Length: 117
Length: 113
Image (cartoon, rainbow over all chains, first blue to last red; front, side, top):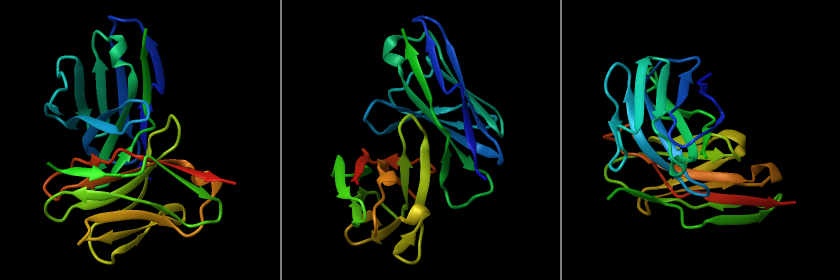
């Protein structure tokens, strides 16, 4: 149980275009999902917290107009990187908190590698 | 400021030997503590967590971690390392007032045959 999927697993796009990444909880309901980015050989940096049915909460320094987050249902959150630039190239990982779990652990997706050319 | 420190960028150990990956934290209150493992180009896999109770927590794949409140540490241990344990390990803390995780910088474990 507690499986989180991401799609796509990797994507290459041209500078100036937009890319959408999906995060799904497959066997549980997730009222809260989190979006992270990870640079090579570095730790995970929390970008935003996504709550079902409400606006996402962005961490300091993260541009909300550039990284659009939508949490339309209890099993799906999307991250859209708008007008992507090469510096947006990174490994994006989502996680989901099980609505029915009080222990607090987050279940992580396999990640999406974005390369902007 | 709340933080998690993993003082070693890399830990090298021979297969069959015990391993320790260190983690200390600076978080107020009674945080939840986690260890995750990451294989190349993959997301994080949950290993174990400490919320309350026994200071020695057992987790997946034979790993365990010892919580030490006075030293604010949560070191990851395994009695006998396997080559397949080679990966990137992250310590994380969840303050008791939040659902956010604060990650350490990660420690690369290399187990040589």
